[in-house]
Length: 102
Image 1 (cartoon, rainbow, N blue to C red):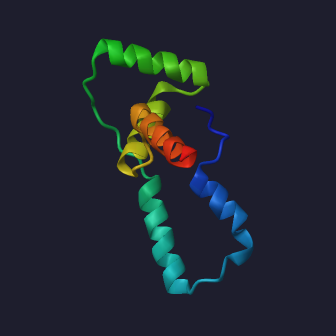
Image 2 (cartoon, rainbow, N blue to C red):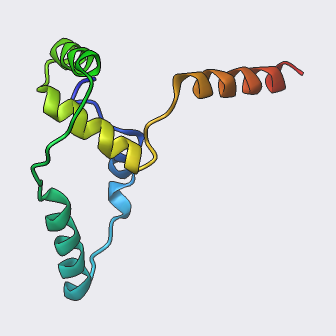
């Protein structure tokens, strides 16, 4: 996982940048409050199996990021429904390919 890659959502935003419009001051303030809350981090204590932590550290090292960042990214993707099971993606691709082959 590279940090410099954009998500699909980020790509859509960048592609649609010409359609941005000005928002009212009150809406801007609401948006800024949401962003500020989202940026705040809280330290937690977490028990994790040695095997899992070793694998996370290995993956993070291969990706060139701190392992805590990788854990945070995984958690964020999970709670925002952006984390997908590999088997489900493969299954979906097979179904799409079967439909196209008809």
